[in-house]
Amino acid sequence: MGQYFEKMFFWDEFLCYYSEDEINYIGNSSLEKRSNNTDKINQLNKKCKCTYYNLDYDYDKDTFECNDKEYDLKSQTFYFIQKLNTNIPLILNITSMNLRLMGTLLFNIKKNGFDKVFCLYTEPLRYCKNINQNDQDEFVDRFDLYKKFRGIEPIPGFLRANDDKLEEKWIVFLGFDGKRVEQINDRYEFSDIVPVITLPSYKPGWQNYALQENIDIIKTLERKPEYIIANSFLSAYNYLEKIVTSYPNSYLRITPLGTKINALGAILFALNNMKNVELLYDNPKEEGKISTECGKTYIFDISEIINS
Image (tube, rainbow, N blue to C red):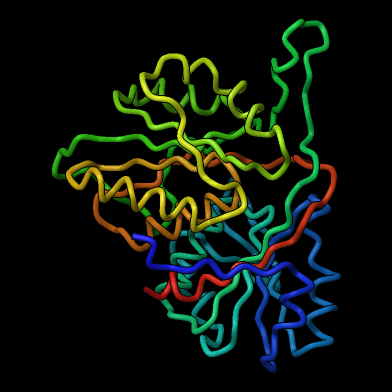
């Protein structure tokens, strides 16, 4: 329990700290302003040789394109990652990266064994809102971040099954779109649900939005929500480790609908715990912008934890 130390830098700190001659940088195409990689690539190139790989993910085909070559996400991501030199440090910008793409990349990064792996994330200052002005309840449809979904489908590399018929726990990291939680639970009808909310959140008060958006399902539960830190992947990782230690004979289904950094912790935990831990995800399609302004940019050194 708690065997890892979270190495986090702000972007400017990382630029001062980084001393290698080269770095590889993977980003993805996005309309989000906070996902713009141009400035960061230029800043890195003043420090070292930075090679940029821009991935354009196709939601419908489940493929991505890089340098005019198309890769099937399920069967060809390994070969894309294998082309990279594992001795050169790697940055993965996860800011607006589809969780399906992000998880598949991390699975294959772990498989190939890179010496140094960093994840970059820029916080949102504001999310786009869809407020129902005609309703007295200000939280009705306050956030409507996603319209389309692939549905429940394993992220490539994370296919698991409860073959031993263990008692199941659904660990759900709650976010701003409570309808997704209800839809997943309507399908599975979980009997043991563990709701998790971030505190502190990126901004003071944002945990209240998550509570309000998910109030219907929270009211049906006998337990109160538990809390993890919004901008810490290790907070999510350690929390899941605590659950596994406390309930060694349970099968965990984990749904990371909260912050992207917490989702990173859930993915890393699933990578390091192949037995009795499953990621349950509805694979939404990102269309248009979901945030309007940029907050802080973090760099997380995940080298130790992904190579364990």
